Image (cartoon, rainbow, N blue to C red; front, side, top):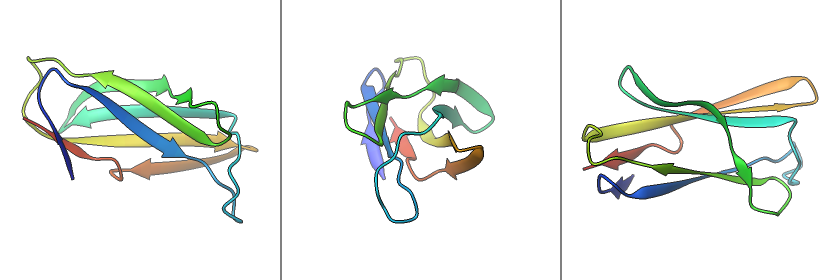
Length: 94
């Protein structure tokens, strides 16, 4: 699991593929970042890298953020279907 210092800007990536592992463009892709019960980022849109199906979000942590494990939930909507990935991008902040 990745480790970052408080105050770091953290790049969190996501890739969207179909059943054939071909990169596709979703209708929407949003991220939620939380530490325990505390939500740090709630449902903000991820940015495309310029390549089909590849996205990222830059989160600027604060020196005041709590140390510990942070979890990410990425929600993708495509063709009226919703896919949720939780904790695959978890990281530690120290």
